[in-house]
Image (tube, rainbow, N blue to C red; front, side, top):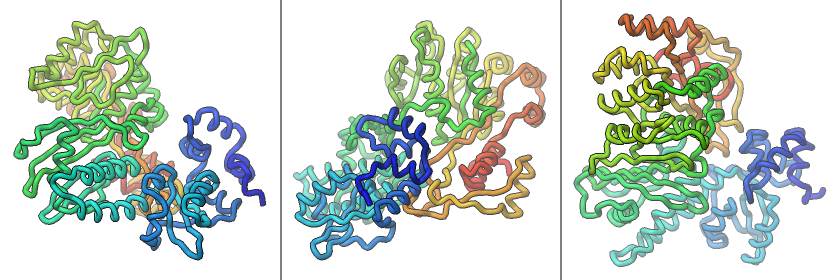
Amino acid sequence: MNTRKRLGEMLQDAGLVNEGQLNEALKNKKEDQKLGDALLERGFITEKQLIEVLEFQLGIPHVSLYRYPINDRVLGYVSKEMAQASYIMPLNIQDNTLLIAMKDPMDYYIIDDLEMATGLTISPVIAAKDDILYAINKFYFKNDSELLVESANEEDEAPVIRMLDQLLSTGVQLKASDIHIDPQESSVHVRYRIDGRLQTEKVVSKHMQNALITRIKILADMDITQTRLPQDGRIKSTVGVTPVDLRISCLPIVHGEKVVIRILDLNNALIQISDLNFSEENFKKYKKLISQPSGLVLLTGPTGAGKTSTLYASINQLNREDVNIITVEDPVEYQLEGINQVQVNSSIGLSFANGLRSILRQDPNVIMVGEIRDQETAEIAIRASLTGHLVFSTLHTNSAIDSIPRLIDMGIEPYLVVSGLSGIIAQRLVRKVCRDCRTKREPSQMEKEIFKKHGVKVENVYVGKGCSSCHQQGYRGRLAIQELLVIDDTIKGMLLSNQPLATIRSYAEKQGMSFLIQDGLEKVNAGLTTLEEILQVSISV
């Protein structure tokens, strides 16, 4: 058997990809990106399929590291930095042979380097990328934490710098959206929010608490002497090779200061509206909505529902040389080329309303207001939409229709709301079923009834059994579910004549509007998520 056979040939022989897909992946892959990663990124293959082909073609076994008994003494043969950079994990040593889990067992350069560095024979096995990252963070971090506590003293800053670097690199590798540093009575818990779920990954010694929080505050340009009031800050940094923007929030609690670090991965910052998981119908309606020259488009949903990503994708779609786009945000989350972004600064009187007033004197075509929080901002935004500007903003309401009374409750005249508002999207994020362990099953009687009630036909539903790719969770990644209400002339008439919201909802339904629960059920039907996920985020069942 020729073990130097190319990966593309192997995948073609196995009937998993065709020549067109291979050429597309090769043409569009990033510099230094491996072919396997490019094919995975485009969804042409799953990680499980890739592992199975390598396992079969190369005769190299696949291991799951979830509960693998890794021998601590082998960690000294491979540095943590090399393990992280090359996605490898030493597992065991026996008879002068080092067993190494690798994401890519065809990377013969790494195998040669390891054999030269260790003087041992390298025996590779295949493991999923996320599986390897979890193992690196679990075993190398545990050893480092013990060393850090032993060497920590008041004058030595190196241990705390290393610890913060580890916390951040773990967060980036695990694709966490937030890191929570929670001081307890006798220890400090570090939790990561991955795919919307918090999980405790580390427990840090109480000795490190003050030094760690002080280090974060210094980097975020906060007042380190102020420990009794909440503070906010931000750090722009590169973690490994990933440029990130870190938003820091500090809150005094009983056992010290709780710190939450929100990670914005600048590599994945800019998505297209085609990547927003819109249903075909909603995609058409939304494109039409944002191609209008004026009007107010609102995005609504709780914190962490992906509203900002949708806003940025929308203004990025409109970002052309002949369009003047100005935003007023708090904070400016991603800095976009060709877009004029204003940072709100309440301490000097630059509020959303004041920023918005000034923006209108700058001859904009498109305006984005980070959030409508008060009557003044709402009124200026709506008046701007009536004077020939396309305005985007966000609100916190449960559904698209609920945004209308919310604006009126803020003190906006109903005729202004009706005249300015052109469309509202309500959005939530749900976890995606892991593609590698997705299995089909028949829906239960209760599930069938829920589908039937909402007019969605169902044959099968899908669940993730849990595998090494998704760390036994059954889910991997997230997707959005949406409802889109387009304010047409009939709805405007209903609002002006004070018709109840139930009547408007009923009319919208007759016009083919798909509500959150229905959009979610369609995505369950397509095998993208589960009913449990949808029922957690949508009100109506």
